[in-house]
Image (cartoon, rainbow, N blue to C red; front, side, top):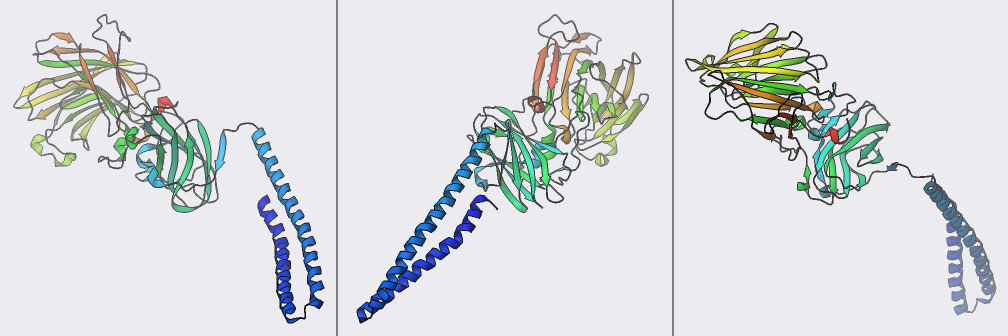
Length: 499
């Protein structure tokens, strides 16, 4: 029980006795007035006077006692505050739940804007804890969660959480260089203020949730929304919204960086050559570094898991469907030849077509070479062939050769791209270095590529800050200022906060 509560309990009997004495005197005074009117007051007059004097003396004594108790309490309270203030600054503060107005906040859905914090870039994962409606099933005290959103204007920020709590718990919230411990009592659809966070930051902001303690089986679950309010409007914030038609999975994957190459005008191109280097720390699970793209497919290298990496070559069918089983027989891409150790099959969910891949342990900081050939083969069919230079063998390896129906074309629509195909690793930055691009015409002339264009497929998030950079002479000697090597950067979030 608190000091003020103890004081109130101690004073309550005193106030009761004072009230009883006053009412007794008041009743006696009324009786005395009545007797005076009737001529019989003399006997009672002295008695009532005596009672009033006794009550006055008693009230003076009780009032002094009460004032001493209150003064002592105030002194102890002042002493406690002084000791707390003189004990030095403390980064962590503890607050109790506050009832903020939900309508004052922009609600950021955690189903599309949160990730399980990973200590390694090579093995991130959601572990079933990030669902379409938010963070759920939080039992493990070692798990932490990172929430990202972009602030495009500096100013004070207020944060809140909407959540369910099956039992009482305490969590720690870190944001804008401030740490707050938040005590949460059991209840559903609670909207709880975290606090105010002064910030001059423009760019991605990170809010981290971690466990402190719980009086039951779970920490708050689900946690639906992060509420953000402050000196800005909703359009000053960028995040994956619930209205995103492709779902939170695509939003959490982050954008795709695409680099288009400009071919020599008026020439039929049959071959395209490119080189790709992935620097150490950028080979994150889920990344696809496409070296040679064309209008009907793509060719590059992937990070598929902690133990598997692939060299992948795919060609779309001319039939428009996401289900390869729906492709009519006369519109299927046919296999002409495949290389040693290469797996072939079909793919879907992003158009459909034929796929071929070599499981190959490519490494960071090594430059890999890719070569494609595209040419019309007659009968309204075109042949697509991919070769990968294996530095361990010091030789070119055939990946596959495919025949696409209803198509007559040379190499068209040449590009490279960098994408993430795993939602659980979308918070990490990756980049690939692309350089030394050459084409060969149908007449056999090799021509160096000297022009590019770049764009971002941002997956419904504005200003995700992906970029392309032009780099001179990285691993190659290129004297012409108009040509060089290009860096494709993928999602720039974690690099602003450390990985």
